[in-house]
Length: 268
Image 1: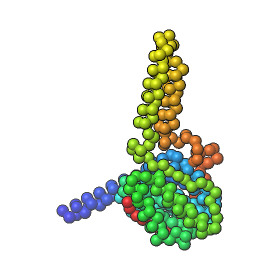
Image 2: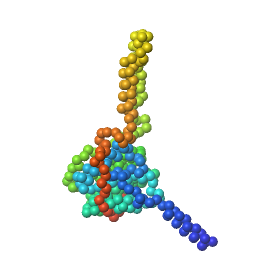
Image 3: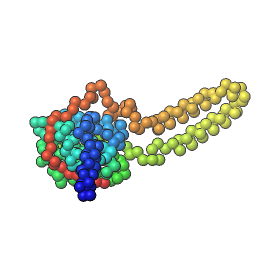
Image 4: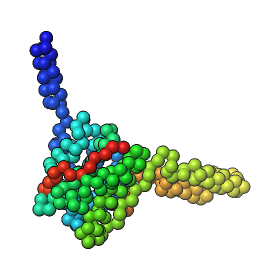
């Protein structure tokens, strides 16, 4: 009986290992690889430009990876595997850092390359992850990542005595019901429509035969313009402004850096 039990356990382990998730198959989608789809498009694009400026100014590469789950694997192993597979940081200097967020597991990891360990020691990495907790607990992932990237970049730049020639990425908190004030605007528009309607009635039947008239058209245009501005797609990738991609913004890849497991892990 014990023999059959042992064989059964070995068979189960073999089957489970065969279906284990292959994290090494993940490919970088730029400096910011949002596989969990939790960072809004504008913040992601802004961070891409900022990380490119960080590399240009300091030589260091900052990478961010979000995944839905660790599939039961230790986050330290996953982060080190991804770091070495992608080769974050230049091969000559190993100055790279990877921020990994596992959303469903509520785990975070800051993996630091050999060359940045004097600048970002384990204790500092842990304190930065703890600083991210409040935003992560409220599912403000873009804000948490932006704070981490900015903090790392400024520390690296300060130690190297350089300045990053790129605006700091800012985020907007997307809270249900806390966006554009549709209610007050609709009230104002309907009040305007009522006022214009009263004027239309005084002008008589001849005016009404020609439709809404200029006043009604003006109110309709106003309504469309106001609501269009206020309820535009916050997550749209085609929006202009800071962070919009241009044809020359293609990601050139990382530089073959390595990490020995330095950094810190945390949860939220």
